[in-house]
Amino acid sequence: MNVHSRRPDRSPEAIEKRRKAAEQARAANIRQGYVHDSFLEEATARYVAGEITREEYRQLMIEASDTSRSTFKNRRPPAESWLRHG
Image (cartoon, rainbow, N blue to C red; front, side, top):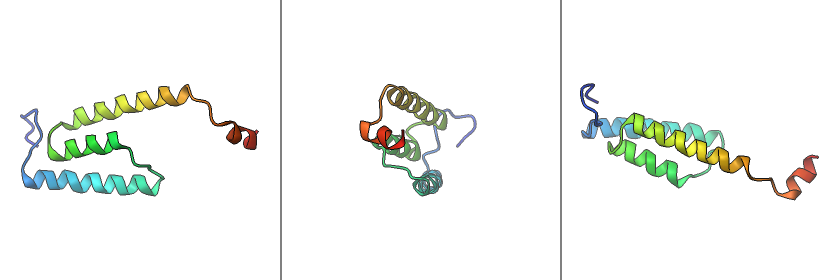
């Protein structure tokens, strides 16, 4: 990426470098129990293609994380799960 440009480098080499990094991150996440998330996959594809900057990608992940936390916080686990553990 050109440090003087706000847009990502869209050369084939730069795209390949981002694709490899995204694949390595995905593999690490899968080893830790990652479950497919279409929003994350779409945002990652946009970043790899050079459509969004790293900062824009980061901001999307923060917003998605905040949304999922607030959704999770307001959900109760199914009765069966807390009966087994309680």
